[in-house]
Amino acid sequence: MRLNETTLVKSLYCQINSNESTQAVNIAKKTFGEQSAVTKLLANKSFSNPSQQDWNNITASQQFINLIESISLVGQLKALNKHIELPLDTMLSSFDLMDCQVVLQSEPTAVLNESSKIGFKLESKKIGGFAIFPDRYFNSDLFDKIEPMINQALANSYAAGENTDLINTLKTDAVEVANLDTALQGIKEIKNAVIAMNPADAMQLAKSINSDKLGVNGGVYFDIPAITNKSILEGEKLIFDLSKLVLAQDPSIVIQQAAESFVVDMTGQPVYLFQENKKAIKIVGYTGYEFMTGYKATLVKG
Image (cartoon, rainbow, N blue to C red; front, top):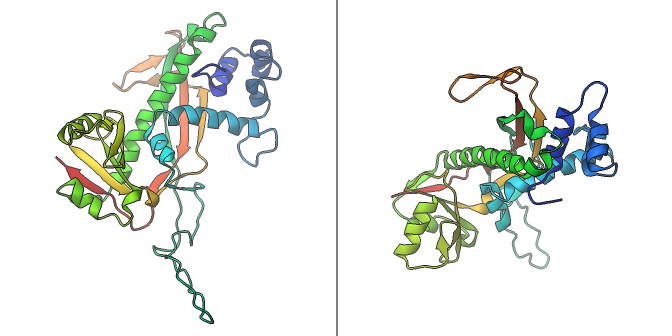
């Protein structure tokens, strides 16, 4: 499969070109082959209580999530591999434990009490929107050439929305301090620290310390990982302990043609799909991210 091709968008093509007499799965067999991932996906559609065959759906969703994470803040954070991953909407306890202790001969072993509030549930959140494409993009003579662009456009849009919401979530109740040094001193395990900032601020910070290890694409600030994204306001730096951040273990993505006859754009104007020869594609993701109970990030302005 070429770069920026995904099974979900191939299934979208099949659904758009199907009708009552030609099922989407038959379009998939004819276009992509009987053993293709998209053919297997369309033959089995349930995400709940998955059978062995239903794993095709989950695999297709994960494939698109991987594309999103290659350009998203969540992807950058996961690459550092210091976060916690938990299933969505599941009440858990006893995973944030106190430090183990030396056990002396004939002495009882200490109970590892929860060091934060017992009981944690990573709430799922829904992120999505409509993308409008011309009908001709889904014609058989053009789709193969245009598919990577459709995938990238959908992934970019989703990642931008997720990035903005992630930063707003992490900034909630953040403690503001005067400078980076003070912020870093407040982290118990400084090796778990992460700095998130706007690309322009990263460039300015790199110049101020004469560093070639930090720039608009991130890097390190005295060996502390720095991630960058334009969703972070210029002049703000968010510092936090990545080991206190919980990310969804089981995010999912759904892409499908909208059933509506018209949709409303961001200016409030209706887009009449049939009359304007356009398709409205709905992309919806279910994910989650939040700090462990009681933890707050640190914010530096200026």
